[in-house]
Image (cartoon, rainbow, N blue to C red):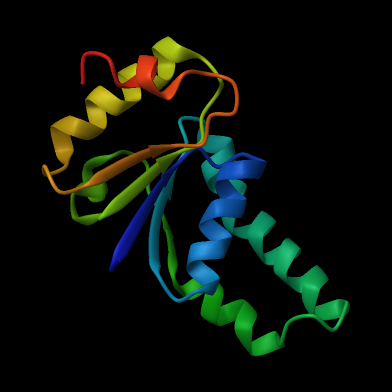
Length: 128
């Protein structure tokens, strides 16, 4: 997979973005909140630096990982993503609205995935 999209940059979304970026996958990510988008790279850098300090990650891996992550304001750049994972608030309506918006900018081959832990995935897919 050449590019992965992440929508929602809270703890879970940023963690998912980190895993893909550390694996060398190009990640495009966004969050509805501008403050969250603005702080995402610094938060990820801090998490990676903590791993460097603990001897669990090489310093060179920090910049390498960050180079794979692009933060964007909207969903327009998500058209090339082969997989998009939503990690937004646990609200069925919000998630369904997001998936409809993602359907409008992606192709039929794009995999839309959810990070939900409480909602029915089948219910989320209704109407899509």
